[in-house]
Image 1: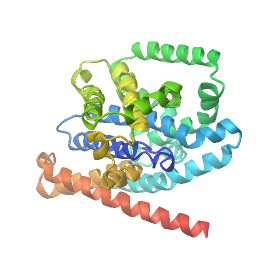
Image 2: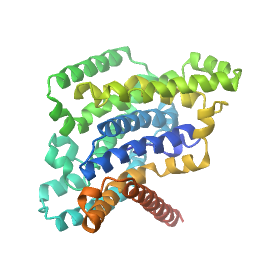
Image 3: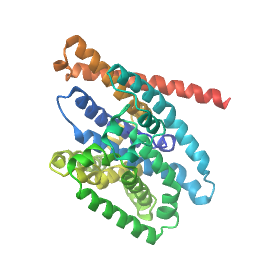
Image 4: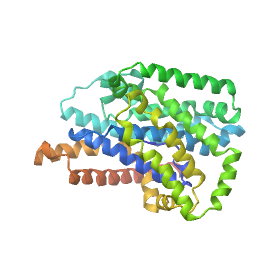
Length: 362
């Protein structure tokens, strides 16, 4: 969901990418809301949103931390500690709340599941039952932290040394992973394999590769070309690039799960991130829209929205169902209530965390 999470501060100066966090977070929100109501399904939102955030994480971490990896000033332990401090408090809070709600609903306490969830390890078990325990969302954090663990190694190989042997091995690994996934049935991919960290590291690595293109010499020439173009030309190009991502929705349901859970989005989403990073200061209409302060602000709290929206939706679907009947839970009013309250809860938690960091730094 992001972040639903990566180095938020490192991408802050690229307003368009910050705003995209919120937009893709909306897709995940729609997916979970419809799943919780049990009436409709929007699997596209979950697959597209999560894949985008893994790719974006590799990209913006490369922007923010890559130079220190390259010049030898990167502090691995400090890096991991900061990443953990960013994601773990909310993970723990949401997991405890989700456990309490589960007990009220009659779910039995499980020591092993609780242990694995507390340490964000449940996604390594390849178990649907394990993933659904607690919030059902925190698997993303474990997979993302796995990517954090490997980030300096991947960056050195892909960006600093540009190791051709490693590039070949990575290509073989991707092809092998795709071959294995293609042999699995759709339910296995949809139920548990989508969360397996060794598969998600591919999305993350693709984000790093997109950063390599972002820093390539031809990208410098492209920036210069962009600066000379009119608003109409840039707006047209932006619409085309955005359309390439939006149109992935049309054939999505016709594809097997091993393609649509992530590989299907690698190229269009990488292009989307690359373009709006390299042209972040242009005059295009979509860039202007994504640079709006409200969208950037909501992008800044997208991780908090991701982590809290599941609890908000579960609680208010239950309340609404008890008051008005569960047959009426899939409606725009309840959707709006859950959406607004998720943003409010995210903002309040972000303030609490900011106050806590301020006190610790004094």
